[in-house]
Length: 311
Image (cartoon, rainbow, N blue to C red; front, top):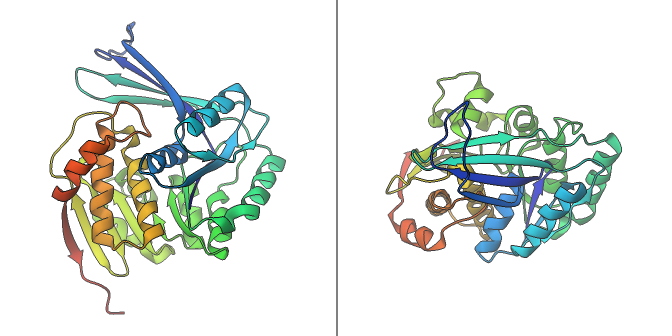
């Protein structure tokens, strides 16, 4: 079974407008709201694929209760730790004229030291029940930058495989704990390397820092993976227009499923690219267009960039 961790859960609100014009008033044509945060989105995609999955993390207040209830309704088992603060909201504005998504992310509630310690104990008690753990998304105020490193080390000690999908210090601190996969996008990779011009192919530089594999999301150009068994780029067969905000979470779901089943990397990347592309066709993060996924999957092009290391 797969476990996703969302320390900074959110109620994702999506507004659809004909056109987004800064400094003006807008009439919203469609409003949707659902439980989210990156790990929650990963869990929702896995549930849609029929994979047994549990979502954990922090929730608080009426908004947090709504997040948990919404995930349960979507087929996700939840085991959150309640905190005193109110779960945050995130707002995505979808513009129909150009297909762009503008996202506003609240920072999240402040988590006390006691609440963080409670979660670590909670995690230690049941982590042995899971084969794969996905640690993804931002850290709320009060949670230490070493949070993913702590949880990764705990999960690895219990025999679970770990994916980290994070940014900045949370990602950097996690590397030494030896996650099985880290999945930055190309912009997060550039920040990690301190090179604004960094390309997805520069992800190989992170391998020396501790992870077993590095998978870089490169937007419509697909995914690039660096592993001890070689490196590959996987590219979708067509460019799709829609909402890209949940594409990376769909890719993480595919990676988690592949780790759980031992799927070889070329097939894993093709699957992740197709699932990610199918997410772009849906109006809200955490959803995938399964017929589109089935159609796109056989046509993803996977190219080997480097042969396995001889060392």
